[in-house]
Image 1 (tube, rainbow, N blue to C red):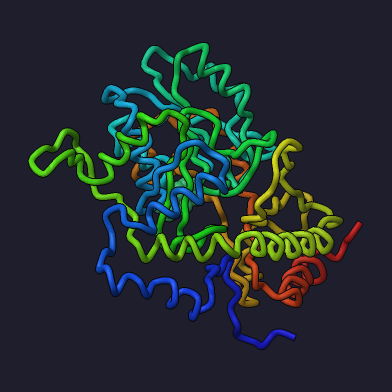
Image 2: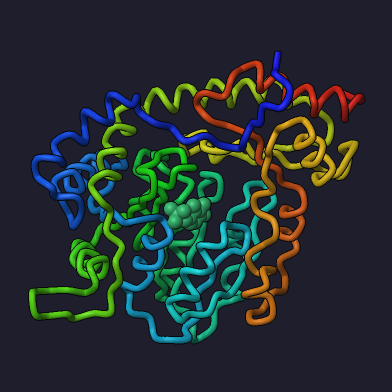
Length: 377
Ligand SMILES: *Cc1c(COP(=O)(O)O)cnc(C)c1O
């Protein structure tokens, strides 16, 4: 059984063996080429293009800069409006605002937490230029409907696919939809390069533009054409990615086994709900969110505290909504977000990672089941 005092966090970074990584980085001591679109940067771009089933991919220093730069490539007029959701990591909203654009928050759907496509059109004005939806927890947005709206009003669609690494939708890589998608390879994500990210798209012109932007806008030794920044992925990160990619299928299997174990333990408890899975999409088992409904014996916050007292660090992702954060709250309209507000109060992410032990899942489930919910139906 569990040793008292051992903490279980919501995630644990996947790593190759020490020997494998050290062997892989050895050549860097010969070349001294550590960053600036090196050999491993190129190799990882190629392998990921293939694995993610996209025609174009540009590696970035992290997922946030991937989104910030993906938005920047479209040169939207300052102050233009971007429709997005507040039920996400704060990075999504930051990336819009840091591009001098105005986030317009749209509500989400109760069944999967993604943007409510039926509420998008009401928010469109003559200043709207783009939609930034989020495949939250890897739940796929209503891609067809969003595309239809975008075409009707001539808007760009940039997906925050930070949670959706490796997901296929209708047989295609999730990153092949919309005008661009971004992925995060942060240490806590399902696939990591320590810190890292990527933008995927199909127009090759965007590749050139991003290449330029992520390297300070430098075109030549004496020529800078754009206000870029530094968002390049270094070679140590690229090599970590190459190693982790080799083991990714095993990683998925391990996660799937644990995901299914949770489902067996928790799926018949009154008051606990799960998000719907899109039947046309594969799953990457990145997260295990549960929804604590009103008919559960205790509230989400009480359950969070009780788990914490037992060393289980579940997370309230995503609470508060980004629209409620002090940096945005009084600046942007924050109305008609009833479903998002409700979900933010009810969702709890349970620990899920490849080497989470099965006994730990049983332990977590028994805290939820036996100590709290005596009334199993
Ligand atoms: C992690 C995350 C990001 C940012 O990615 P980083 O690699 O941490 O910069 C953006 N959006 C969402 C939804 C995320 O979860």
